[in-house]
Image 1 (tube, one colour):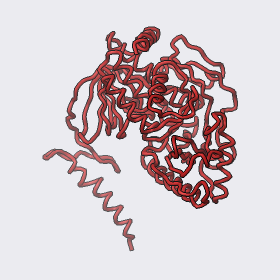
Image 2: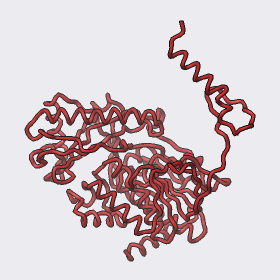
Image 3: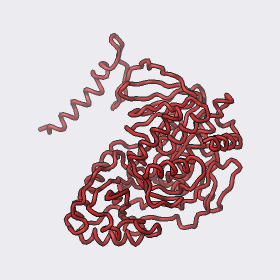
Length: 469
């Protein structure tokens, strides 16, 4: 006797592979042969929307920096973001903790603006805690003031080229499918979505097996008295006190009968009685696999809820602890690394490489989170087995190798697995975005592709812009 689920599979197989394929074609069109397991989508005309000088895809740390810089330098700039706010991992991801931020330019402007809003804690020059809601408003205000045209709830889903030249990005949103032309584009999607759609080569994960670094879901929780939990909160009263706080927090988790998936469970103080809870790792999940991302998100949110409930049951200073919000977007450490005209490698970090076209100099060390649950029990975070020296990232690593008219900014630039584990943090993402925005604006002004712009000219333009602000 045939099982019910088997009958359903057969029915849907016939539906998609047979008669239903014809229903997707325009009326009167003949049904063409379709490979098994595929559905043929009919060709259609896509509305061509207003042209821009520079189009930035991805409104995270790199994308907002790129768009604001390009617009300030005179380029008509359009910024697309998939979420309902700007900031990416800072806001939709509730990161709250910033690394490698002691750099000239836009990073310092952000720090000054956050301080005006009393929205920054543990005010170390290179790393600090910020308030996600304040960051959302700040980035929106800066984009509006610079004249950036921002469109939220919009995904880059395809691209058009004329030979090697990228000519348009195609988006999907509530407005449908739309095409947006420009002479220069910046991929700041984090996962290299635009570059992949445009035909760029890319890598992901550890060489050989392609296993990426784990994901992390963050959450904001409220406690009755953060001062009563000071022993367990990293950097709360001492900007150097991290590992002792982690170990103390682990002991409390053990007392609650909980072992977290992340071997370095951490609490950060946001303000008043709000804390960030960072206790989750999701292993072996590729950023390009929507089904796997979905399952990881559900698991992660459940773990956070379970951990906070267990802590609450301890009573004492934990009594009343409650999750206020979990991240809209699970934190992704590693997506696609697009191929550029230079690849930043482990050797660059070993040597402390210097380049004439250096756009920024990362100082954050190699930070490889364990790739498996078993590895997490042995070494939660690896530093690659060597001491990194601060190194230059050249403009060439931001220039797409396989496509003209395309720059990359943020963690999708051209680098190997080891180097990426250093430069992927958001302080470097901002600096990379600022550089990409400057080069893009100059490319438009000089009617040249980005790869023909000298970094010295872009650096001078940035210097003059900073002097005006």
